[in-house]
Amino acid sequence: RCARQCPLSCICVRDSGTVTCRDAEHTELPGDIPVWATTLILRGNNISTLPGGAFSTNNGTELELTTLSLSHNGIMVIEADAFTGLPRLNLLDLSHNPLVYISDRAFHGLRELRSLYLNDSLLAPAVAQLSNALQGTETLRNLHRLELSGNRLKTIPISRLDAFNLHTLVLTNNSIENIGKDNISSLYHHKRVRIYLSLNPFRCNCELESFYLWLKNSSQCVDAARLLCAEPDAKKGIPLERLRGEDVDCLNENLEAVSYVFLGIVMALIGIVFLMVLYLNRRGIKRWLNNIRDACRDQMEVYHYRYEQDSDPRLANVAV
Image (cartoon, rainbow, N blue to C red; front, side):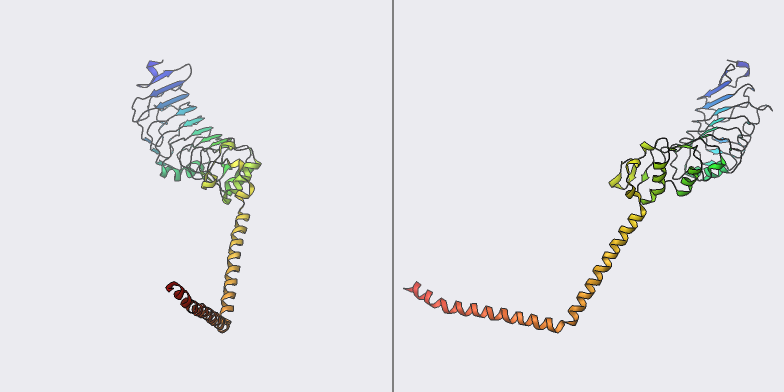
């Protein structure tokens, strides 16, 4: 412990280059971080905003940090150029913060960044801003690992994988129902990328076809065996890998729909022809119905006559 060079309420270990400030209820970043520090861990504080140049005012000295952990600090806002002054940073952990605003230049200057963790940290407004923050600068071209688990993402927030040097992309426990054709095409062109997608509510209909074929023909999805259908109810809980080709074949679905439409048209035509036949033969049909009515009437009169003729002898016998 280097007490003379250590920020207040923090623990410093010079041998490992680590400065740890846990549960100290800091509302601002410590401004007297030792120049020898390579790892800074700030956890359990109350730092709501990372202002621009937050790490460039350390008594006029440039920090040598390679690892920066800012998880569980209640950070809501990351302003432009918040991490300038950290040219050697390799790992940045911003997980478990209720982020509502991320500037397009939030990660500007992090040219050596290899790993970025944003697990369980994006509220709805920040989700919409994330894509611009990641791709709005050319400084993240060396990014190898990006973790975005538990953020209710509906799509992959990266439209151009060639803007990075990604090897691992973690998107588990989000709200992704399908992977679009553009993202699939990009993944086909960047085969080095390994992606994690479990615990997402996939909609297993014919729109899943491109993603389904990619799963079958590629080994890029590391947890492919854990991907399950959430909809429709008939397929709920079924692993995507066990689906049949016809389950996600839009052509078969369209043909089936067309066949039902065609059947309906044929039945309607038959009904129209039948009605036309009835209309054209209405006089003959009327005559036929009248004949049937007359025949029934004659038959009933015969029965009635027989009953009257046979009733008297029976009554006579009863009287005797």
